[in-house]
Amino acid sequence: MVDSKLRIAVDEREKPSGVPDALSDMGVRIDFDLLEVGDYVLSSDIAVERKSVGDLLSSIFDGRLFKQCRDLSERFSKPLLVVEGNLLQLRDMTRNPRVVYGALASVTANTSARLFISHSPEETATFLYFLTRHVNSEPSHGPLLDKKRKATSTRGIQLNVVSSLPGVGYTLAERLLAEFKTPKKVFSSSASDMARVKGMGNARARKIQDVLRQPFSSQQEEDSQATLSEE
Image 1 (cartoon, one colour):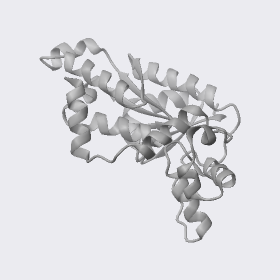
Image 2 (cartoon, helix red, strand yellow):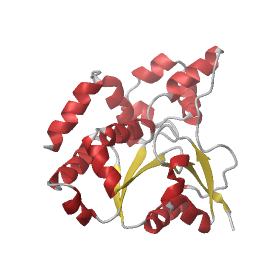
Image 3 (cartoon, rainbow, N blue to C red):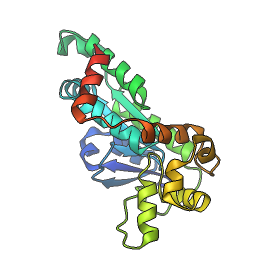
């Protein structure tokens, strides 16, 4: 029986993994979509990138892992990286398994993504099931994915601008604009003032301030920095 309180948006490319089927068997409503970021979206705060051991290894060498975790951290306040499988297999897959642990350490240190090790699709599904139960205590009937709306009015454009901040959806953007009146004042507010807005919190406010104040760097510079921290 499907529980209306338990919904997860799942990238369509995850269908063969077995995780969506296991979640459905547990009563979770699955909304398949082509997700721009992550493989599973549990709420406006939580999204998950799932990696098999083989995909983890290839994504380290082609640079996808760092970009995916960075994008996940920018869009969601509580991103998760789930590594699924037996890490001992790395001994047969690469001459230097330490590279993988170095990359995971780099992701953990340089993004806000939390790491969870799972041994099977069923274990991944069980973890996501209980995590979804914790974050969704009320039935949800609207779309899980807060997709960007096309806007022509000043109000709509202001909402789009503010909701582009990491971890900020349209509901929180409206609260921020109601508090600070203009997007300019939202962007120039202090972390302590921003944290007082309902639903914001200190961690999210600090993350936003870090993004706003940090100098822009090119994609090549970020990839180079991630590689150096891995070695």
